[in-house]
Image (cartoon, rainbow, N blue to C red; front, side, top):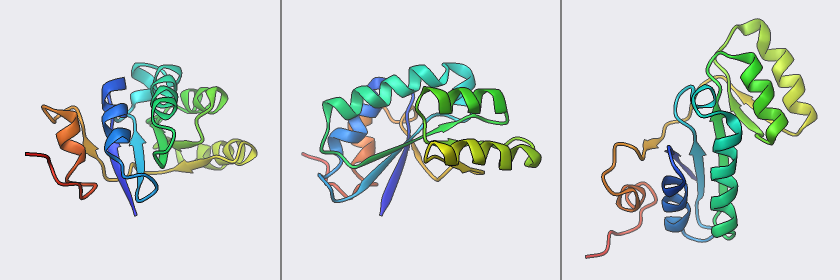
Length: 137
């Protein structure tokens, strides 16, 4: 079973990965809606890469939301993203999926359900309930 978290910062990535029980549950890190257009796919990719380097035993998948921008989706694939949310025109889906297939990637039409870590005052406490981890007293 996987639990998704919308991350906005390196701190969010690290909070989600730090709380993940080793190998028990997959954490899915998802950029904010249309996040690829705001900070760029490279910035978010580095956040995820940094988190994976710091917590190498955490089971993690990452997904970037490209909104409806096919150009940004292609840029995300080129910089290393393999799971993309693309809500653009239906005629672009097969073309982008073909590109993703060549890189062992996957195109998603909708975002998964996530806990948005921006709305949580303390990210570490926000990740515990979805991962079924008791909050320390």
